[in-house]
Image 1 (spheres, rainbow, N blue to C red):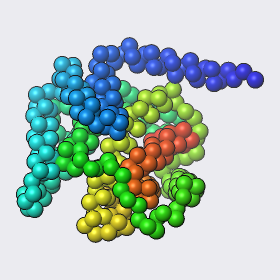
Image 2: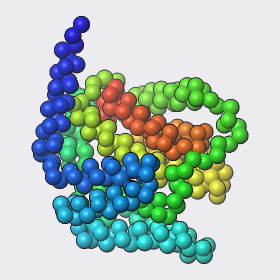
Image 3: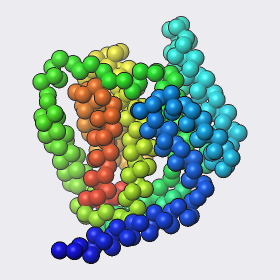
Image 4: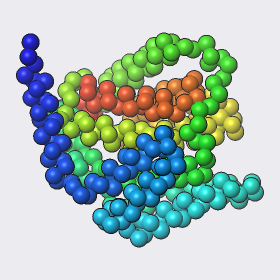
Length: 305
C-alpha cells in the first residue's frame, strides 16, 4: 500500500529543510564547518585543527564570535596546551582546574563573545509537550578541542577490565536495552514525560545538533575526561558513579527529578564506556536514548495541565 502519511511527512521535512537553508544562510556556515570539524576529530584529527581554524574565521566574519570570544578561546586553548606540557604537579593541577572552569563556563553559555544561532523558538513536539527552543551553540562544542589540547588521549580506546571481557555484544545490547526501559519507565512514572509517539518535522535538525553538538561534547567531557581521570584517582567503579552524579547535577535546571533521571542515564553511558572502553559507543548510546525520547515521548518534558 502507498503510505500517503509517510509521503506527507517526507515532503514536510523537505520543505522545512529548504526553509531552514533560506532563513539561515549564510549565518549557518560556521556550524556546517563546525560539524565537519567535530566529525574530523574522530576520522582525521590533523584535519580537524585546520577545519576548526576555518570555522572560527568564518564565525568571526559572520559575527558569530567577537574579538572577545576569540580572546576567551586563546586563553582557554593556551592554558589547556600548557597544562598538558607542564610536568610540575601543582602548576598542572591549577592550570587543569582553570581549564575545567572555563569549559563549564562555555557549556553554561556564561562566557562573553559568542552569538549562538537560534533555529527553533518555543516549538511543540506534540500537544502535551513543553515548549522547545533550540540554539546551534558555538561555545559549548569548543570544549572538545580544549580537552584534546589538554589530554590528547581523551578519545582513545581504553583497555577493558578483565571481568568485562565476559560481556559480549549481545549481552551488552540486552543490558543497555533494559537500561533504556528502566529510565523511560521511571521518567514516565514521576512523571517527567508521557508516551506520545510522534516525530516532528524538525527531527533532522534535532538529530544533527544533538549528536554532534551535545552528545559528543558531553560524553567526551564526562566519560572521556572526568570518568577516566576519576577511575585513575579512585577506581573505575567509583569513577563511573561520581562522573554520573556530576552529569546529573549538570542538569539541575530541570529540577531534582530531572537530575535523578539524568544521573541514571549517566550511569548507563558510563557503563557502556567502562565495558567497551570506547567513547564512540557511549556517544551512540546517549544519542539513541535522546532520539527515542524525541520520537516516542513528550519532548523535552510533559506539560502538566
